[in-house]
Image (cartoon, rainbow, N blue to C red; front, side):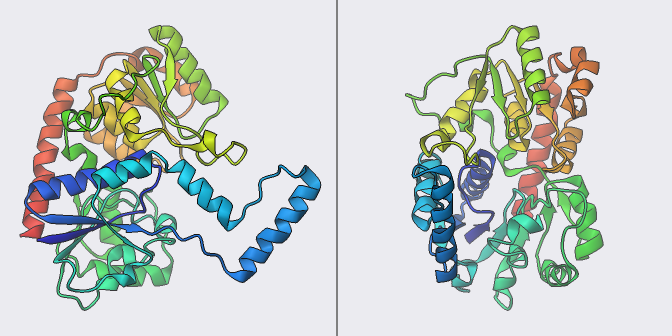
Length: 377
């Protein structure tokens, strides 16, 4: 069967890249031909937008000097190419794609089935740029004779973020799906309440593969990590720093980071290059302990059987963490502040019973693969 995976665009997000890789990998292992639909990056701007950039650039250089960064189409292209220097290579080497400017370019006879993939593809504000909120529910396939299903699609949060008209359109399309599965337990209730469909709760695609499969992606010349305390943190702050320092001191481990601040506009292009995916994976293999505020880093800590502490970030959404940790009986690994960490420090630093966790994961993988096999017939 020819299958298209529709997910959010692939760029510098390690979790976003690897969940697409994993879902494609597992579907290919079932004997299907699989392509991931990815967005073609377009740096064309309207004449009005170009004029605005030019005027703002002139003013900026008058105020800050000739070395001030000017946000032109050329700058955005250079920035994109710099940030994705390594992750783009990994995507090209390991993920077979169908690259489009918009999903309307796809035609009925290209694929037999569409799988709306994981990550926060059903979080309205993330889907609006690409593929579009209603297209995240495959509206562009309306009237086509194709199979439609979702695998671990995520709303990201446990409240409804869609407008009334978006809800009506998405619900109409959701009812055409052959099967629906979501990544969070809260997504089951949201699907029933707002879309009028029953959904199955399944694990993130990255959990369908084991640590050994990911280790095979690490190149022989990938450098070893510079410490034993892996710190994969998307948001920095004084409390985060205090937690890291405390763990490093208590466990006598040297902290090391596996990502750059790709969104920090104060940094040079060179400083905003995201390190290779292979180095991120190597970080988990080398780590003795992991501290993170990332959903997927939490998952890979579990896959590589590493003790970890995850710092919850309410602005990015807590439902993902809570659902994942509840599934594996690891809710005690989640902290929301330095004060919370201090109150539970001794228990947070204890080893995790990964024999029990592995048993749960084996069962969840089996359920997820059975869902895909049944849905695809």
